[in-house]
Length: 116
Image 1: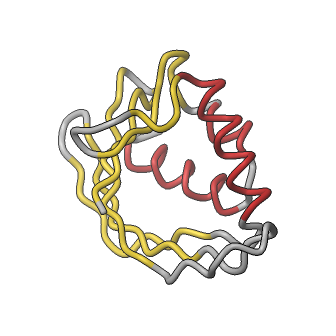
Image 2 (image 1 turned 120 degrees about the vertical axis):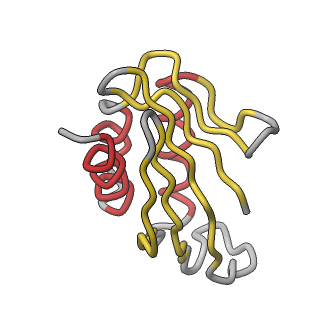
């Protein structure tokens, strides 16, 4: 499977709110982070638990791929994220765009960095 296909599959799992299938496409020490900033979800297990918490809070959460760019070991997706109402009663998050940079080691995603 190509790196682009893997990143697209990760988004499909994200939209299905299947954290287990999402992290199955990642290395054991993979993480999600703000671009050039703090790691938000550390390791495969940290990513899994962070996603499950987000999915519980925003059960209508979805990411639509708006644009795709591919280089040797990177895939950049421009995503339009819609959260929907939160289950904890917090304020509605307006839809937003994010650039997500997927880094790869072989056929596994090793890091996702978000530029928002």
